[in-house]
Image (cartoon, rainbow over all chains, first blue to last red; front, side):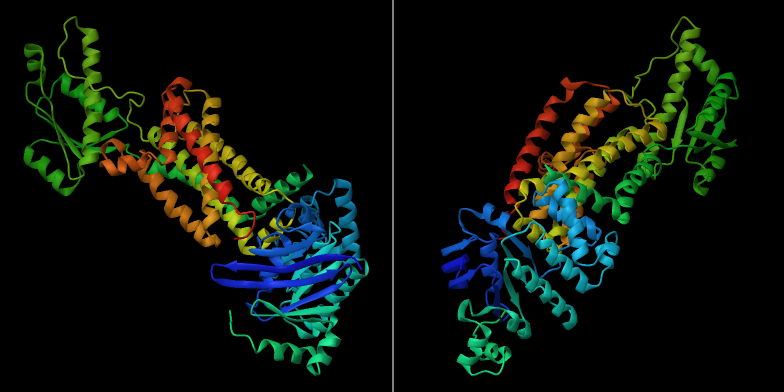
Length: 245
Length: 368
């Protein structure tokens, strides 16, 4: 299996505070990799280092075959990103948002047109194409934001708490989109607070106080910790945490 | 190129869909021009005049009709005694009074010299001075007429000449100030707010994760405001010419060139503010308090810089609008050319490149 994300002892310090401490893991192509942890555990820091938004303090990391220290521009070409804050422009229409993001990734006019068409059909939002994003319900916005982060066909997509504040039905639909993308070979790196979503992942890592304290498939983790569900697994690990936000 | 184009297109949509901001962008200069041009003017029109005419001869009659015809004065009453005159002042009916002494014509003929007394209500000293200047102008004009009639000069007086603005109009001084003020405010505030907005919304993160060059973000953010500001400048100029009867004496191209430089400088300041401000509100506050006051006070269009204490005088040197104000005054009002403003242009160019370099450097490619 091809490895698309590789880290070894990846560390980020802010002064004396070690936000992410010696993270080592690998993620293979097409995998849905869940990145769990309580607030302040260091998830976002780790993700930002992998996206090239934050320079690591030490350690090694490779994303899509490129080094995070020296080849961030090439990494950027190959990843998609959806942040926990809602990331579309509310005063632009659905189609304009798609076109804009396709545009800044350097797609040609013909490609932009094709992609916009394809996305609108896939999301069944053809009739909403000319509506301002601010008029859409939150669940639709999230689905749209996810699709937009895939508009340039990246190898890896990073999702930072993509389903925050969304109802269970829409969350389920959102995960259908994730499965669909993974089925096409896109690697999904996702952070979440919802433990039912952790069950959907191929493998999960659980961060506690800046350290990865568990990393395996949900099934194995439950077996190892003798837990009925992921909720319990997470609780057993997270309550050992000393620092809080 | 598609990348940059998509971004610039998006920026224009942001600007044109935000009706409130748009109203402010174009309403602000209009209101300012109207306010400064008409309401806040040094010019004093229709001053109420009381006349006490002891002379009752040709000269006094001619002068009275001249005063009455002037747009600055309205003769509202004629009194016969000094007591009456005083009561007119006390009642607040008169702002100024003219007293023609008895035997005015005779004295002028014999001594080639005569005095007319002007009494002004100086409880508001500035307007009293201005009014007495207007009055002096009328007397001078009258003298001038007589000189041409008779071979001998009847009277010689030191004649104050008001260069570039002989009628002491308020507008010529305020319009360049308003141009500086409006461009400064629009550019710094709008550019800083629009960048901070992306940070606040979280879209900045997405932009920085994309391969889009951060320099392009800056360029496309500044582009709409640059164009709007030049458009604004043209509106202000048209209004000054049509509404305020101001004439643009110098080269319009030079004016627009200098303004573009100033606009760029202001945009760079906005960029710098956006690097430090975390919310749109704080960006707005910094732009308003940090820019509005220094621009108003230290530009020289409200208060002359020459009269300021040394620390303020020195401080005014780093206010870009101070230099820009001189440029517009020279080009627009005096009709001077490039040679008269190259120093100021050079200073602005220096400020502009310095600010742009610093702000681009501060614009973080990686978040923290």
